[in-house]
Image 1 (tube, rainbow, N blue to C red):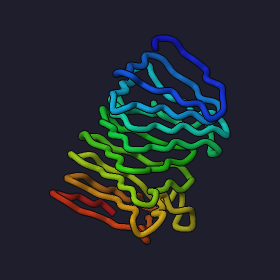
Image 2: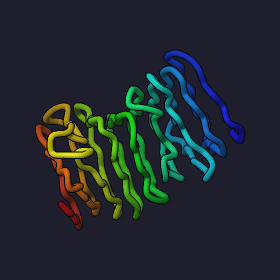
Image 3: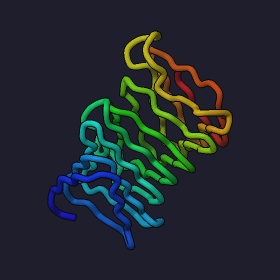
Length: 193
């Protein structure tokens, strides 16, 4: 897609039958599921997926390239993004400042850049799910402003897993607690608290 589109709907699903490259911003109002069918979603330098107030975007079964800046973002804290069996290749640092994220199934972030979580809301690793930070990628997270704020990451249960496979973790000065789930460390691992 080369032009900006404002999608409005309820419980809509868009299936990819091949690789898709976005060259402009796409704004989603309502609940949308983009099903990649194991195809590639490329976000060019001008592309973005914007989740409107009170809306939800589900990205499912795909590999995302061009992942950087704030190309996937929520307009406010009432919006959310869910990754379901998605591999994200960080082409530069990616910063998430509003709304919440949910990680379901197996979700990977790889590359030599950072996933910087700055939202004041808590994001969730679902039951029987794994969020993996690999190949020198870095997760930067911590409570938004102080030790009394919400935790940035919540494990839904004992089968929720945060894995680092040659990945890194930077905890901001506000700190964070990881409880209930599994923390899996493989390969070289760097942590800065």
